[in-house]
Length: 66
Length: 247
Image 1 (cartoon, each protein chain N blue to C red):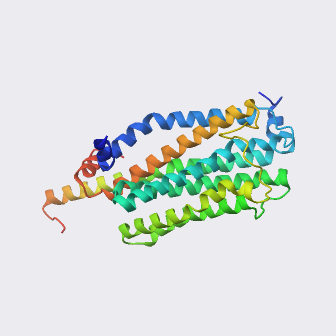
Image 2: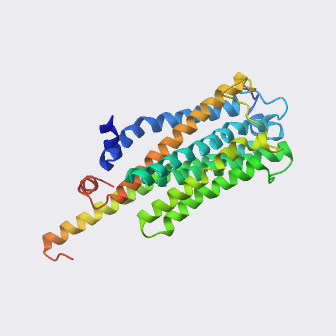
Image 3: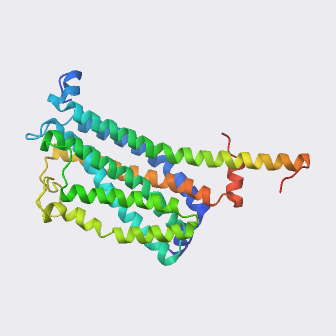
């Protein structure tokens, strides 16, 4: 490791706040673009599966919608 | 060969193959990103002139490079969907836009943070920075244009045209540091001629660039999977898939 201690790695001779904040923002954005499509796909599947269950239920009890 | 192109146009096949690729590519990408970030942040020596602030290079350059490469992908997909009316190309084009916007945003913000200790300012209206800002607006424009139309076919056409017209911005971004006097430093890694960066800094940078390409691919495939499901919601194969889905 280049730095002697954790505090040296955090301060980076005064450049620490710039470097660490840049990496933090990057991490947040990368996490967002990775998690958003996963959430969207799961929501679609959940919605479709609920729709189908509703339809099946409607057919069994004989009061189908349209 | 032709059967491959035929399969590419098939939503269930594309959905399945994207899932298979993601199953190994996604973990590899995340591990590579973690290794690259740790290497760049903690295991490299500081730059002799810029000090430690240069460490931002390990996210700034990969994000900017892949933001540009992503625009090519979006433009090619847009051209294919315009010319051959291929539905899956339209899906690919739409899926590129938010990822490209996110990467351009990362490049701009990290560049701005890097500029403060290095140039003494957060922002300058410099050719490279301004053309990157236009790239961000082009990506956001495609996202917004899709939402603006009710007719998705017309939306796809309009977005493809916008994407292709926006291609003029790409050579401007590449050449901006050579054409105009600029605060932004010229490229250190060159395809031809000598690379002006020390190998101890070059290897983690190359790893990060490769990781960001992989990240773009992962996000693109994930977005496409979600988009395919939504567009094919009324078809038999999606209904079957949803039936087997346990939340």
